Length: 338
Image 1 (spheres, one colour):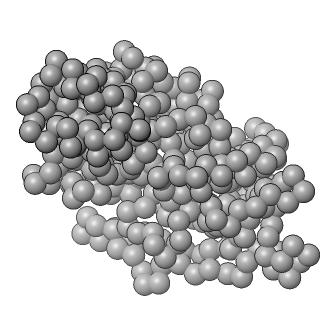
Image 2: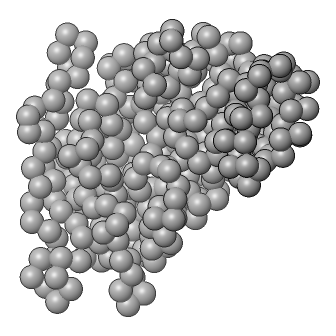
């Protein structure tokens, strides 16, 4: 067995105290890196800078207490992490450090993709990617709106339109009978609405969702199979490595975990393997290494590239260690680069 040298991994996350160690994939990845013997550093999007043409950040070393599986549930210590002093403290640039000193950087800030998020990806463009692996690619994230990106795979998606035009949306809804309206920039099921022909609130729904016709929305044919669940499949460099099924709480048509949905173990079907194969090469071309796709009834509905989640739930249900697979892929890739 080849011994892997310790490397430095930086995670750009939301404030660490806001993360849920029993749910957040970012924590699972950081834990895996620590267990495998690597240094784990954290920062936030608002702590990034460009100095002398390079990307810099305020970095803090973090030590984590890994969660434990107790009677089928993850249990975290309290406290579950400890932060060190900032990397580079006392040097000429105070607490800033060049991200080129990291072996890999994970961009794991949650959406929405607002100005702050976009500007952070522009800063990450100034990392020397010959030295440092960036997951996911800043340009790939910018080019892959999580709703719109799926449209290029027209053999995999349900019938879909994107428009701000109320009349065009009405025609589509009347033709399909039952549809789902999705804002293009939200996450975790936020703002998703069930819209059907004859709905007396149709005008108000469309006006509010499109900001009076100024912002386009996605409208998809409603898939009745949604009642059987919304499958999340995790892909690593284009290859599926795990999946789970998300089921609605019964009081909401949405299956998202953030809206109270439950999760269940599942397997990837031949049709879903076909979908993964259809999108794999494009994901690799765009530098989208760690991705979560959503599939309902054999149709691709979203491609999540910003901070896809699900690892904790899959590991709990299937006794896997997906975080270790991701970090081991990073190790192998770094060895190839060197």
